[in-house]
Length: 258
Ligand code: KIV
Image (tube, rainbow, N blue to C red):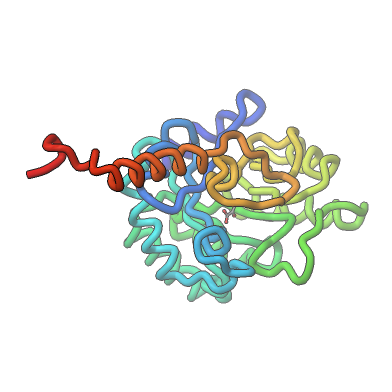
């Protein structure tokens, strides 16, 4: 097993796992200093391309951004989202996962779903491709308004069953998105592998957020997003200073001219 995955598994019940997204080298370089898992999420569709859903994100989009991220990731585990409809069958899942790994040199892939994609997950694991699961709110297939999951006893039971199925199929961790606190807590306590929460309470073994959201580069009003810093303020400061110096002919000085 990948030594980075081993390290992440050992954190269960000991210390929190950090997972952050990156879509390019420069952000990846900073993220990599703090995170256990760098995720090239297909959220890049909405964050960078303004798509209403992640369904328009292509394999080429994911591979291109991942190649850039690879340049910035030195120590964390690099996971790449398999985009919508690239793992509809066992054959396409294996072919596309192999392509992602070969072209981006990432460590693992992430797929959204439970029982419905269990054969695809099994085939990847059998072929020694590390897989991260994703349950709860599944942005690739969510219809209509985004709402929390695991709210009723029936939904809770189904999520626990899906989580157990993913675990027995060999995924090394599961993202729980927008899962009700009591359900996320029980899944986390039931599983031997870690859960990584997003809007799914403090009881998960780790937390993931879209980096652009938490640094205030992307404006969103999603309930689970906390803006830890407003990076736009600094960007604007730099751009304003540049504009002032160009207009006043202070820049470029001799030092910055050939
Ligand atoms: O696409 C993504 O960035 C994700 C995380 C937010 C979990 O799947």
